[in-house]
Length: 83
Image (cartoon, rainbow, N blue to C red; front, side, top):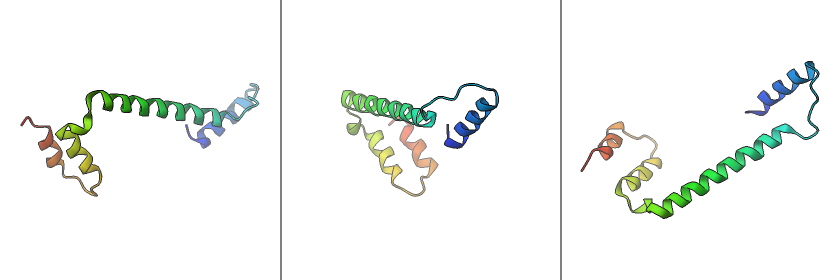
């Protein structure tokens, strides 16, 4: 939710006479998003340590594609084919 969307919802609640929270609700949403991203990052780190993704040849190829400006679709499909 963007700050603009939050402000629109807040103005709608003011018109319907709902009490406005004393704290900034946008900051609460921001903290929640940060917490979700942190948990997701820690999950990825745990999975990486468990199955050692760096040693997989297909993963190394995909990471190399991330640095390129254009990625040919054929090269991605060829990496998924069984060798």
